[in-house]
Image 1 (spheres, rainbow, N blue to C red):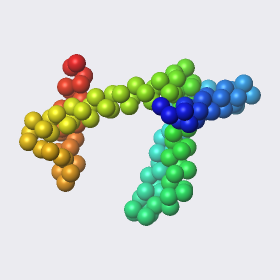
Image 2 (image 1 turned 180 degrees about the vertical axis):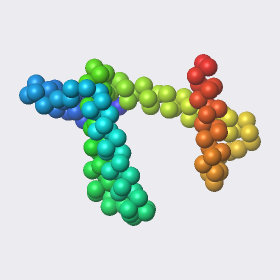
Image 3 (image 1 turned 90 degrees about the vertical axis):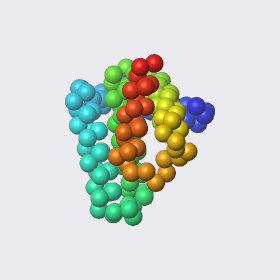
Image 4 (image 1 turned 90 degrees about the horizontal axis):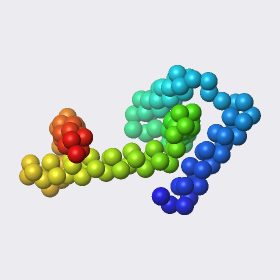
Length: 133
């Protein structure tokens, strides 16, 4: 990760620690999950109401709130947000590489223009392959 990205994740942890030390903290994972779901609803409202012309500033703010809520869940569960992000990016990279191999096996040089349903079939195949290794 770049230094700035690491600094951002360290800032998240510092703010979470500061809030917790002050007594402003989550009590349960259910509370955090409710917040995450609430943020998803707000994001969806921005996407739905604007139909492709979403107010980028408001949308970005809501996505940022979602990211913060997810990082709060990491903090609450005593997981490193940085390590969690690294692991998920590694997993996605392995699956993406499997998608590329499957596409090549099927004679595709790209998946541009393929219907989403077909992409999801290949994605599920990739997940199965990666999970077997």
